[in-house]
Image (cartoon, rainbow, N blue to C red; front, top):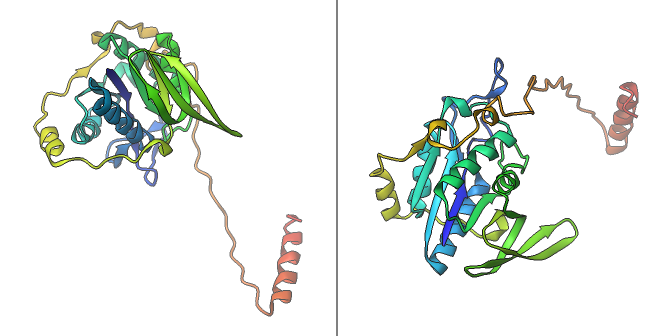
Length: 262
């Protein structure tokens, strides 16, 4: 079974910084991690390979620093990794990103299953996974909590919805976006860590390496663009009310009414 996992490197959520000139994330000098939901996608791919055989390939799009996260995926046990990196890809929204990733998957070819985390923690759109499937013209199932059964032709999954769950059967190839409840990601193995340290030739594909329409990638292919980004400035006034609880409540109510909150 040929399994592809789409992984994103994201800034640590406590250290997100925005370039005020370009309104894009500043990645240089900012600690980055594998998107946590994608770790569950990697783990599920490894479990399926252990059960059915085959190969797991992780692909990611971003600057060269993403290589460190790809090496972490190797240390977990994936077979191959590929980085899509080109200035032409910069500034892509979810539509352009999903298109670019789909072109890479198409180049790999003969894919049975594509796994993605349900969303990236820096954007929270949950659009890239379904977008890839649409560009590839294959079925997709989102918010997968469990893979119930799979063979060479079809897969049965449990999908979480607002008021319960659905059992869905789909023919392969198919794309799934998975929830964290699907598994517990493994820690890197010693053998995997040593193998990742020895990898100095991770493939880096540019736009020239893909059968791609340059009008559909990067900023040019992004119908949604960030016009401005502002950080809320909180003007907090701290007040402590003395006395017994009834006095404190009365003072609080009076203050709220003065501020016209009540």
